[in-house]
Length: 151
Image 1 (cartoon, rainbow, N blue to C red):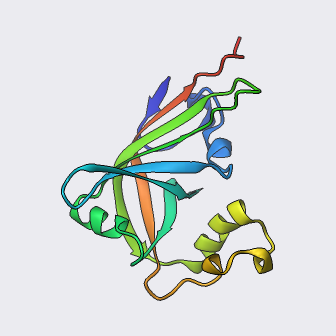
Image 2: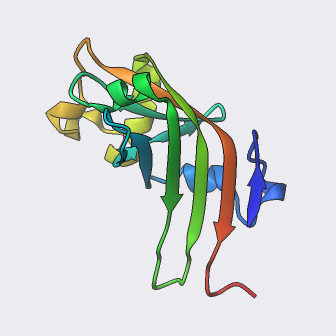
């Protein structure tokens, strides 16, 4: 296990965290709902500039949750039974809702939907005026390789 605040340079971790977070994986984000109870949401994300970014808007209660309590825990992991690869990145910190950035959002969506935007479902082509981004800069990061094929 490796834990660091701030940057995620490769030499501090058991695997290349930047390359791992560049994969089209799903992050699970834990926040407090309007009653203060924990809630977890899966999100497609972009790891860029030392932050995790995802799209939100009026359709999602997450913006309201974060306005009340910006503390977030996030996990991205794999469970590859064929290769016996089990990698985890767990982050904690505060998230903020920021103005929508179309280019950043398109970079994120290309990871999941491919480069040909003409093939994207209509819901992902144009966002309404209520679209925002969540910017999450981790204050604490735990990186673990629990793989069974390690020497």
